[in-house]
Image 1 (cartoon, helix red, strand yellow):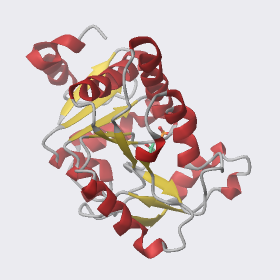
Image 2 (tube, helix red, strand yellow; image 1 turned 90 degrees about the vertical axis):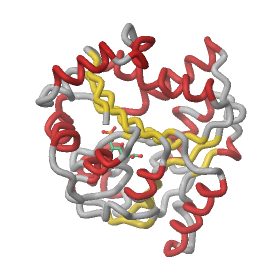
Image 3 (cartoon, helix red, strand yellow; image 1 turned 45 degrees about the vertical axis):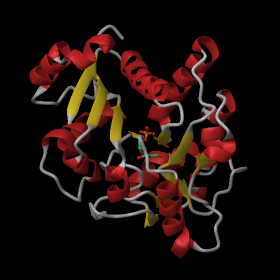
Length: 263
Ligand code: F6R
């Protein structure tokens, strides 16, 4: 795992978007794994800006999102399909037929996960998986005790996640209590993972995820098992990391980061 701490939220966001843009330029038919949530909104705004102003071309790209609420359809403004269209897909030139999320309205909840996994396999797997982290350490909606080998499935959300996300609903009580999510094992299958963490309220959980022992109580610790995991944090989120000096040293000295140091 590599940890990069940037002085501001803006530069952490910009670095994350630039890493995705560079991966897309290197492989125009890239398969992106995408996340939702407040942290990602700025990343998608930056990717949309790069599309508008720098001709970043998504025309051959495919995407699979991590998760979707069970019971919400694309027209519901709290569904993740709605979020993705609003924050990214409507603002770039991706072919929406190549963008996939679990089907929150399926009448076959039991088999939706298998169907989704099959679609990811048929697309050749995910090249780069973008992630945020929940206050309880979830990635996707893999709540505490999710098996580190779990696959896409329906999952009951924790009260903490309910408290984190329900204020985004007009009526908080309307937030579904279950969601489809890629599993931790599904996420670990991605060829690269890129997690963005910002804000002081994520500092404790980020330190536990990066420097604590691997445990299914904190799904994000599973990223320690991934051979190509990069975590980008802003100063506030990185405040409690014990290895800070070493992480900075790597960023300043590894040749592969040279092009990114001034972002
Ligand atoms: C959503 C997802 C979640 C979020 C996490 C952080 O697709 O994967 O794991 O990344 O809940 O959400 P924010 O950014 O709103 O703090």
